[in-house]
Image (cartoon, rainbow, N blue to C red; front, top):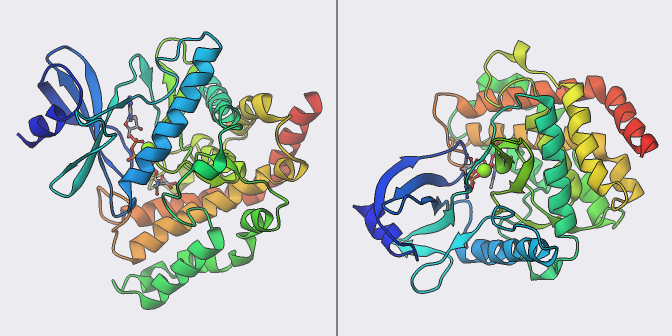
Length: 362
Ligand code: ADP
Ligand code: GN1
Ligand code: MG
């Protein structure tokens, strides 16, 4: 009944005929809802442990989606699937507060899909185009308008400090069993700071970035397999485009899912790395600075290490941040990320050659 009441507060015709939990996001609670008018909506409960001010999150999303939509309209292009479409409440707000929980509603993007894993290499070229275009579309967005929805989200050295604190406290007595994983991070503490350092000393520019470009946040057309849009805009903030590049590679170029238990299946597919890089650089090669181009390969290592460290931190801290659906889930995820870090360390020269070839050919 709750669901009726919540959806009833949004500006939609009809009532619910079907609702189901949907997708594989780690943060929000997502439902696919079908109504009597045969329309589909995504109803989401915003995770307020993660996003302390949902109004700021929705402020950014409103601004960013209308900016992108306007670009399409100005070019006389169909804007209907170009960006998330917020369904407003009957009071005209972008979210609805119900018993201290915050809900939002988006129109379901029809005829498109997100993937947990690439099934054909060309899909990842499309994802590269999508991430590149997202950056380009927002290149003239007034960056100071953006609210900071999660402070220091990709401040890798601060993430490391938090990790050390949690590992020292070891409140759940899990540290002894993950000595090797803790040491893996510890041994790489000096490899984490380059992007943040570059932002600080201004050798890397702040841009309007997505900050969570994992594969299942990019929608492809079901039939043509062409990129449609980038979703999950909760973490759009000023940041480095390098994190968007690296984060997309972290999942999309992996040969296995993020929570694969058999680590022998987890490796970095250079062909997929190339496909994504081709799409991404096709759009952005002239926009990026020399330092950004130089750090592309390094960014894949930094963000993968950061992400693995975040999973391990959450495991040591009692699994409160990321949704889990099995025992040791965050530890399993941390291990795949560390396996990928090793892979990147081994393959970084080949990765650099791929980038150089793409840039040389361009
Ligand atoms: P989380 O923040 O938890 O990752 P997302 O916003 O990414 O949540 O949504 C989870 C999944 O729901 C996405 O991976 C995607 O498959 C699906 N999804 C989200 N919004 C839409 C939409 N407007 N239309 C179609 N599918 C969507
Ligand atoms: C979370 O929400 P989702 O599943 O798209 C997380 C990302 C992590 C990712 C790891 C707000 O992304 O930062 O990289 O899990 N989002 C937030 O899979 O923390
Ligand atoms: Mg998501």
